[in-house]
Structure formats: C-alpha cells, structure tokens
Length: 209
Image (cartoon, rainbow, N blue to C red; front, side, top):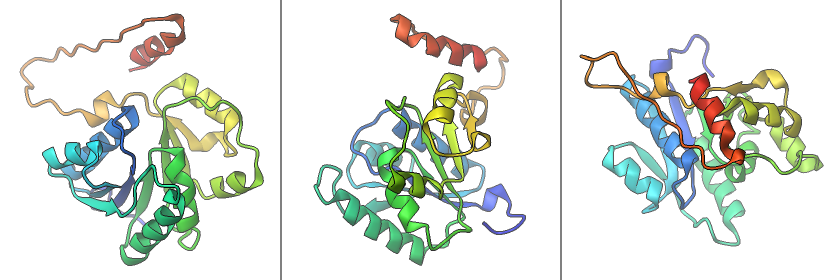
C-alpha cells in the first residue's frame, strides 16, 4: 500500500464470486457502497447476473466479472488465473475477500505483490483448525481477519494460523456502514431475534453494538 494514503483515495477490490446472497454477500455490498460514498474507489469482483451482481446494479456500484462459474469443477483454476490477470493490470491498494473459498486463490494471486494488503471477513464457525501445510502457508499472506462477533473472533484465534493481533471484531458495523438521511430524530432502534440457544451469540452482538 502506498505510504500515507488517504482512505478516500483507496482503490479496493471486493472479492465475492458466489451465487448466493448470505450475510457475507450483503456485507460486501454494504462495504462497497460505504467506500464509494466517502469518496473511495471500490470495485466489486463477482459473477455476472448473480444475486450480488443484481444488488450491486441497483446501487450502481462498479463491478468486474469473474469469467467462470462457482459450481464449475475447474472454478479454482479459472479463478486464480482471472484474478491474477486483474491484479496485474489494475493498481489496487487493498484486496478484501468475503469467503474462505476465494481467499486461497487471492493469496496465490498476491504472492508477487507483497505490498498489497489482503483482508478477509468471516462470519462462520470453523469445524476444525487449519493445519494442512498448504493452507497454512497461504494464510501467511493474509494481513487482517475481520469478524462480526466476539465469539467468532475467539474461535478464529484458535482455528486460524494467524497472529491474534490481526483478528479484529468489527461487530455488525451499524455506526460505520449505515447512513441515515433523516437526522431529525436521534433515536435508533436495533433488534435481534433469538430462536434457539445456539443463537445467543446474536444477543451478544446486539449488546456489543
């Protein structure tokens, strides 16, 4: 990353080449919109005509398209070559992934560009720690891991081969990512639905927010 760069001038590649529209896809859209609105230069890297592409189109967000398909057996090979070509031709200040599946390809693609930071936002619990040598080696390229909840951050500390200092809990990002046009009232209401004991973490998130 260039020294003393202003966040409003950041050129960020938001990597989300999936076909679903889960919390992570919505977060990537939210981040992209926020960065654009403060004067940044985010580009969403996604699959054309996917749900996330349609959501981005409604907001007129800039996009670049992955030329393959998520369910293709050669997804990772095509993804790596496609992403490597984009990074080679564009001058990005930061690359931000929103799924582990795309992280490995991004890590490989950025090996030749050590000055470009690599972030990943995660919101799911890992079943077991990453111990295989290949993925541990690729994870060394990651600069920062962002989580939605404190409990996810704690699990990430024990599951991911990365320094605990590089794992940050950003919460749901209400203050940073949602802008209110109506400023007449200072009241804001935030809700959370708890349907089982396994979702008590939602309550922790809402209190943290």
